[in-house]
Image (cartoon, rainbow, N blue to C red; front, side, top):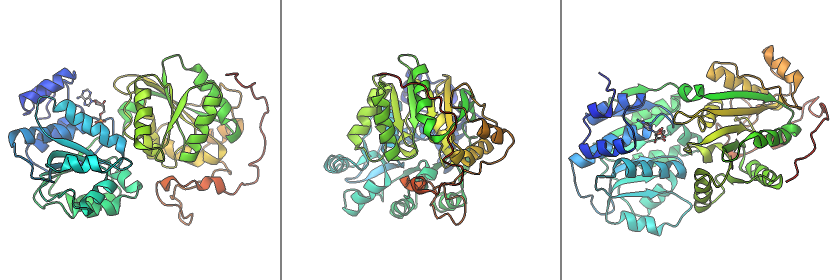
Length: 443
Ligand code: AMP
């Protein structure tokens, strides 16, 4: 029987106490399905995304196991290894271990790139119970003899689809090769492509599978709309949407590339709003500072790329703007999941140009519903809206770096390269639509 409260679960009292303090009483579906299995020591294949409560789903049974079998970790070793693709996710997972393990005593450290190695080396020297790491830096430490993973009892591979998108497959395989055969393994991914299945097969032993449907639950709490618009009018439209936000409301604006995020951020600031960008080219301390300012409400607008925003868990985001549509439809679901969290409602507005039309069609196909069209703006692209309503792809539509069409050479996920800058303009691309631009907002 699936438990309906944490009280019913075979978790130790200090863990239940920490959960009660957080006001967590009812397990989320992934928690209800995974925790009992994990407490029995089984391997797990979880198909679930950030926002489903998967962090607690794996950290609670692991903390319970550490409490039941308190061993001193050996020097330069770890009993639990959690591998995750981004620093933000690693930080968040580490914070979750602290929160849920508040009344337990265990040693934990975080390992990721972009910051000095020495504090990490010193933290690992006496041995740790829980090591939360990103693959690249962990591999560096392993190669330099700073950590030995042969004593890992519990291994969590988190956000595997993103890990593969980011090109970490080789690093991950090298790390796994150093783990002991005897261990409990947990594997989480939002999607299950053949490559991911194969990886899972090589890692897990007779796993229990738990699949939580893509974040429809969150998406249902999000009012979604699309604005059909020409590329040159996107900024004007953004001004309108940023201007409609009330004081204190938080907005995330998504850009496809790091360079695009920087440019957009500079422009938003020049228009009298306050925005900062987070993306892979900013240093870890810069990213953390920006995120802290955003979380505390001091920074109202965050401009982000997909990879950097993964794992950003900010409760009060009321508006997500897809300034550029993602090449991968799944990323749309992740993006809009940044709003409407923790029972709140939110808005997600996507700008779709003729060039991006095919991506938009992919998104509607994935979420299996029509996103309402917002034509209440001066730059509404009637022609594109009409084509879309009739299910006809715009001739100007260009799948750039999505890699979905054979022969276009892009690799999956784009890897931050922006081939769209160099795409071929097709006839009609330079056609100007109405020129009734609003006067610029004065700062
Ligand atoms: P995650 O998918 O692990 O990133 O979790 C998403 C959000 O849900 C985080 O803000 C968690 O703190 C929160 N959360 C996780 N489990 C529960 C629960 N059982 N009850 C209430 N909130 C939860």
